[in-house]
Image 1 (cartoon, helix red, strand yellow):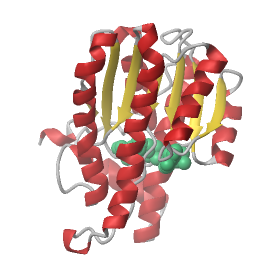
Image 2 (image 1 turned 120 degrees about the vertical axis):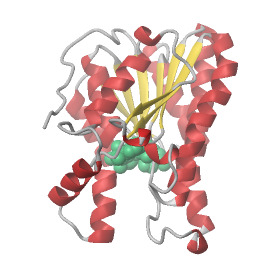
Image 3 (image 1 turned 30 degrees about the vertical axis):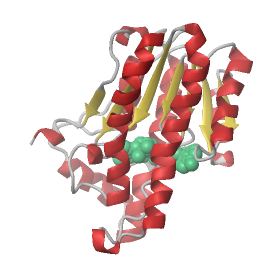
Image 4 (image 1 turned 180 degrees about the vertical axis):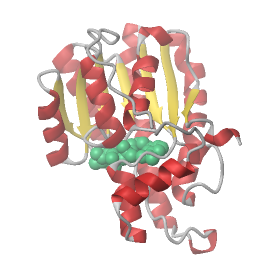
Length: 266
Ligand code: NAD
């Protein structure tokens, strides 16, 4: 089956400064790598200190780690300020950090509202905090591109556990609500809705609940996909993010870019 390869060295984000939350792993890490390869300086903001600093070290001199739990507004503000202090500006804010929360039991009757709050705190409140503080520093420059990672579980019901799904339905709404205001300041905001990708988040969750091997999970996801002959990979999301973050997308704002091989078209 077709696998994506990195775009390779390029200059599509030359001289841009980007902050990516949840960039220590998975989709965020793949995006950080791609951004660096396209000439950007990247701040890897993650709540996992060990993985975050390891990722920054792997990506080289144009990547820095800053510890940031997106549920703490002060830490989000500090991460944004760190980017500006170090590089003089923030061009791209990618609100990607997210958690799945409990996937069993899936029934609404058994919903634990504290777990619901926990998922919403990271996926929704964390994203709002990121947008708020990015706009604060982008506004004076009359430019900027903000991205968020939504999901296909926020397009169709029944694909994910309720707290996660509800949090992801919320993101395209946030994007539209905010886009209308910040367009006045020349700032764009978009989200990307990926299909299932066997990142550490997904693999760990499925292994925990179903006790299955990684290979089985990857095959199951491939079989689930509608677009045959290709797999959805973290790099596919990273490439979409490069496009939306870059000046190539200069008139695209308020959009939800669905990267799902037509899964939600049926
Ligand atoms: P991942 O677990 O590999 O990476 C998530 C990262 O976010 C981790 O590094 C983790 O430490 C960090 N993080 C978690 N909570 C945080 C917090 N409070 N503050 C800061 N960082 C925090 O997962 P992933 O699959 O790469 O997920 C990234 C995003 O993509 C999430 O928003 C997820 O909902 C979304 N998504 C994933 C898939 C998929 O199939 N993998 C599909 C659609 C959407």
